[in-house]
Length: 260
Ligand SMILES: Nc1ncnc2c1ncn2[C@@H]1O[C@H](COP(=O)(O)OP(=O)(O)OP(=O)(O)O)[C@@H](O)[C@H]1O
Image 1 (cartoon, protein in one colour):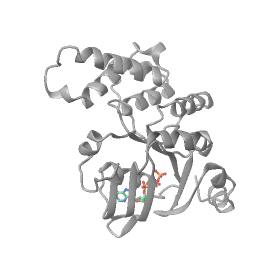
Image 2 (cartoon, protein in one colour):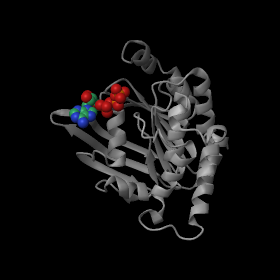
Image 3 (cartoon, helix red, strand yellow):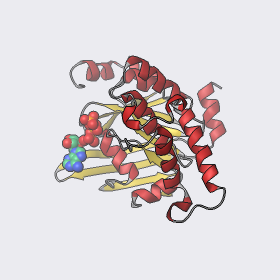
Image 4 (tube, helix red, strand yellow):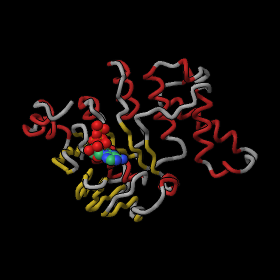
């Protein structure tokens, strides 16, 4: 058994995420048509496709920001199609956004601490004795996981762009997620920062699965074991990274002007 198969079999059977016949209309425009995808617990998958392919809409359907017009979405076996976003967050689903949602005047550590506190049960009440220590400890671990320990007391506004994106990953990991949707985490990163991102994503705990939308195919294919290619709101191709990379139709779509 290879290392990916070993990791997935250790995480558990069943499906983390199951989309069946998901369609999303915006007026007359079909942003998604009949999308059926199954992602196993712990699986890491890239969703690739040209501008307007439907990638962000797919994320919005999964998170509940824009529910599907038809079709069903199950999260760890539970039908969450009509659940509001916070109910999905409670069940362990997280996402990052292309636009930053950080507090620039606070430090790295404070941002992560607030995210941990926000998803903990005590957020509407005074902290129970000992809970604050646990949250501080969780925040420390997350800061370390995204390689920001050296700048943990710096204000976010003073960080480099790449460090801010790393911090966004830490915020998405607050509160024990089971599955994360990463929306173009490599956007605007330098080659060195991209390398750091690859290391962070590939070092996440085994049980955390994710879908990554990424225009940088090189980054995307290094951090996943499966790929879904989308085109015009439909699934165009699925496979392992090596298959996708060497597929002539994919190459034509990417290199022949179908991609930015
Ligand atoms: N809120 C909306 N209202 C109307 N049309 C929308 C809305 N959101 C997306 N669309 C349309 O749905 C289609 C798919 O858009 P989507 O943003 O999901 O694509 P994408 O693959 O994420 O593209 P990009 O790579 O440019 O982010 C596009 O034609 C877009 O204009």
